[in-house]
Length: 181
Image (spheres, helix red, strand yellow):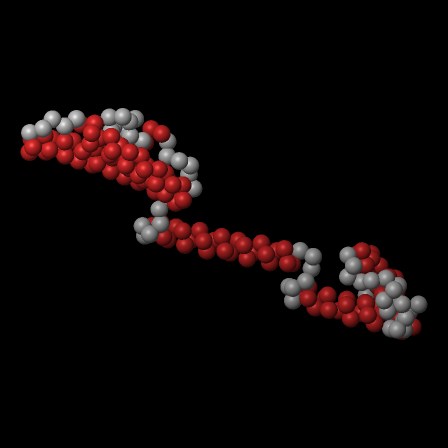
């Protein structure tokens, strides 16, 4: 059957359609297997679908991998933008990495503990000198250690929220003497 003899209203065959559009029967079979062209449709229906598919592929919108490729390119672009933004903010000091934040929290906790326990010693000495009474250091230090324990728990929670790390190690907590273990 020559191209001139193909009636567009007849049910399409793969071989006839291949002759009509000037391609191989295998190429048309691939479209049928991929459900682009449906068996039982007419030559006119296949021709419309086939031409539209060719236009989409030529415009860069079609093809089996085009949507995946586009999604990958968008994701890669977004990652590049995020990476550049993160480097810029880190360089300007507006953004700190997790390790820096974690170390700052640990160092701050140690400093706070030192200041508070030092204040406790100063309070004990001041009361003893001013009122001439013997005051046990533990009377002041014990409540301060309890308060420091609460501060340590809050610091651990803060570190976990900010840095995504677990609780601060137990070595960062105050011992019975108010020192760091």
